[in-house]
Image 1 (cartoon, rainbow, N blue to C red):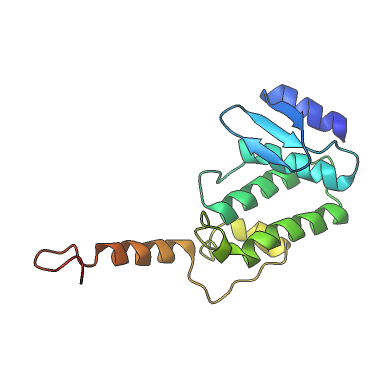
Image 2: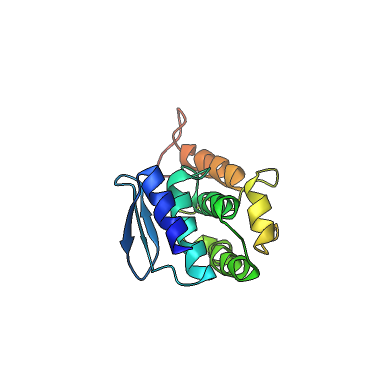
Length: 154
């Protein structure tokens, strides 16, 4: 598995660095991961590569995380139950704590393909508005008081 990560990084021009917590830096095409010694650390490394090569990486946190996990699943030599559990734990933590992440734009609309990954990770749709509706509401709130003839302070 470690050899597969080395090959993927070399093929895609990605620098591989060791670090306790995973991270991908798009500008320098670098991933920081723990040494690959198990299914879980293999999944983690694939996930970080997915942040550089996967779908939806310009979206909000939950959608970009889903895109990175989707890339990992599609490009793994084998995807095991342990890898599924790790993905569910990490992705689920973003969904559960989305309101604590300032960069979060909420869960995607139900028709978004990210739900394929989110459902696999055990996430379920909630009563919360999808990202697009939340953004629209925030935008309309920011326009209040800016119409001609109204007081911005009031």
